[in-house]
Length: 325
Ligand SMILES: Cc1ncc(COP(=O)(O)O)c(C=O)c1O
Image (cartoon, rainbow, N blue to C red; front, side):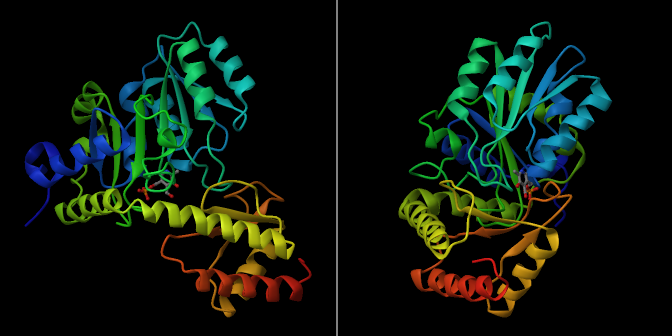
């Protein structure tokens, strides 16, 4: 059976059930699923921004946010500004300069993909209140990860219910490999149903994927110990890597980047680790700036202490071999 776009005949009960559950989980009134978070982001800015509005974006935001903003700028001629990564003084300056705009939208990642650091959400929310702005957070790396029960960046900071718009993926911690959503006030998701082009002109999230995503959220709610284990794994791995002499970027998230500088070095480390049975991808320019190539370790709640020690032994062997430690 074909699964066409939502508004024709593609909306199934499982979509509604999943959307209600996701909204509750992330602390919003309503949510709307897409086939990916890329689509959720892409479908957001062009739908809600007009010529008199401005979107103010963190310099290190994910490519899907950047493309959403580029699309909005082209289609609706909205204004755009970029603030230096997590620099609240710069964000405040950009907000101050935008007082003439009809609507100000601050868009940030919750956890930044390449650095593994967390957005300064309490400051962002406070600035948004001060300058009458709307806050949108892409929580793709934080859903199922941050907060005591995995509800994301808002829960981590005790701000559940205080973020206006949350986009996220079903394909990372929620395990489904596909699917995304936008959560916020019901008026927003109703509006997106009518105006968000990937929502209108692309097929619905397959009901099978909606079913598995719903099961994943329920599983997580029944097993908050998974979040605890994930946090402990990240802490242990980061600590042990540092003890070996590596310099992972500091942080509290399961994204643990080790900066190496040259792309060739990152690729070499990644290949040698793979030969030892450890899969850690190297990233170079243009995914990260020139001179900031890295390997990005990603921890999971499914890793046992033995798995982590196995990986650490490989890091020690390879790190010594190529003179990194
Ligand atoms: C921050 C962020 N937003 C959006 C996406 C896109 O998610 P999806 O794979 O569901 O399209 C990703 C995927 O890497 C991401 O890291």
